[in-house]
Length: 230
Ligand code: TYD
Image: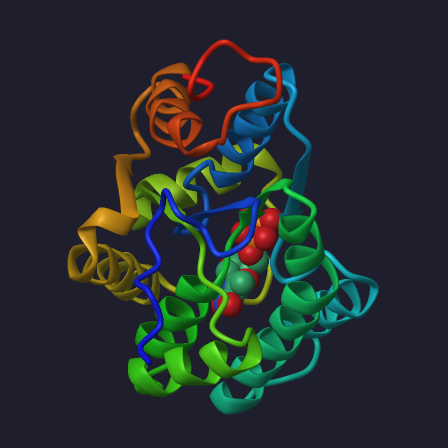
């Protein structure tokens, strides 16, 4: 027997899973936080998390893979560390939260590995995608918000924020240009699943687009007169 198709409005678990993706300096963290606040104001349980991270082992792997000082890190080694952190994240944090009906918002997920370790480091995109499908037992977000940022603008924003760049951020502009293209390609291959936004838009405008896409996915809260939260 074939499995029924999974769509955004018929999630396999009661919760909703939203991922934010984009180049460094795209403003993902701000938008993820704003969406979390909007949903909480609507009475939702929200788990706001990030990759690499979200679990104790994930945070350790984060500093291992992002810190300078390990010399040159092999691309496969790097891909495996991100995937290992993601496996822990999916099993220990994301799935349990979805099972109890929470909205999980993650700042980065599998697309970041396909873009950075694939297009950025030169590993085959399909292999990186397969590794991560295995690591997460095929756990996919219901919607992925891609904040599209040019390498120049991303760099300017990073400098304006704190100036300190991690190992990946400090790669040259052509690395970030490949990553940008990879994110856009992933979105174009599955356009229904993605909300692609120009990261140069004002923060409030971006937040409104994100809310308009995500709120209709949230099931009705008991006692609410409205079908959905929008
Ligand atoms: P991020 O948390 O967005 O950095 P910051 O908090 O400094 O804005 O991401 C950390 C870096 O890790 C970023 O440069 C992208 C990179 N990264 C990968 O290369 N592969 C991955 O799978 C993930 C999740 C992140």
